[in-house]
Image (cartoon, rainbow over all chains, first blue to last red; front, side):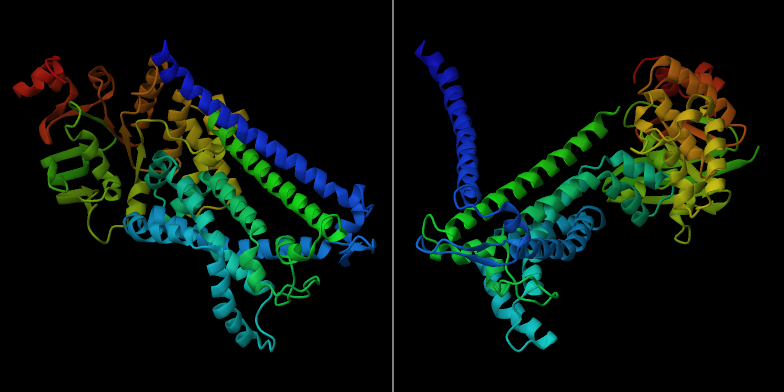
Length: 302
Length: 251
């Protein structure tokens, strides 16, 4: 009896409990974030539309002085600009790199390039930030003749693009590798050149996987705080051009949390921005699910 | 009878393993030639040397000569994409692209630079008619090719090969994954195809060879053992090994 308990039920029980715990923790975090994030609007009575459409960011910091404004539009726009700019820089490189590794030179790619790409993932973001701050920003400042240093949207987007590049590449490699070799043979058999095969057969067949990689990269870009904060300039204004200093949802949280006593407008609006980031990442995951489902449906059409 | 394809002293090596040994044969124009033999005998390898699909496998080395209408297939001046346009191929497993029926057929012509919509429409219709599929699919050209049955998919692959107007069609066990009715349709189709094209088929199924082929070549362990009229191969073979194989003693 005891041995059966050990071999069968114990393992299952442990795994079930761990699984339930993860679900419970996720739910608790969600409930807590929603409750805290909503306080800005429910308890402190700031308007939701102000949060989303106003650029005036001046929440009160002590309970004696309950006024101010929680307009987070600057950070929302900052996050969107810097993430999509990073995506714009990273995607062509990532897809080209994935094509090289899978189709052009699998031997050299697998041995040298892929490990190199994987190392990128392991570098801590503070190192990226420091490199950006001490190498990239002076360089940008020199090129564009910026007397107060090169921190700004462009520097942040470049640093971020290096950080999300391996994510997109790795996922793209997997999806291009998973394209059935029958498609490639059919393409070659009809007299297609290698480039035509890649462009008209491999890439379309791997499209969903590559899109998933792009969304994952976007999610990572949206969520990165430290490295971005080190090179973006941290000015609370909507960027006027690509070189402007600005802030994002993540950098403002990282920079202001020290001066946000509990119960103040500052603290609660930080919670609200945390909630917003949570909702955005949830939407990204939803997108990945939808893309994945499309792929399954296509495969099941047979 | 003129030889479309002439093979002289052809040897093929996968790294250090010799897969084809000193093959000499001439393949007749507008006939069906069947390549038979047990698994691993080199018949599929031989088929793939004709359109240079073996180029895609690392470590393949070829010596000897193979000429199509007198042009050396393996000379460095020969454009391999042009060769594959002249020598179409249909694979063992139906492999339509996961796009519409129309786009499958148009794939080849488009890669060879055809953009004109009207001309593409004509080619799609003609290819589907030539592969006896037009009536089945004319109303659903925009539908996914993957919605077709296995037998239809294979005929679509034949139509797709025809769309680039080849001269030779290579069939690599085209019916081994299909049911008897689909098999019959494809065998029937082959009889029409040979009026226009030179057809070379690899088959595991000896009855199929007797049903469709004008000439049959028997391969064993990389050697071409015997090559003759199909009737001779199956009723009065000159080599005892051929007799053993066609009478079912091994394979």
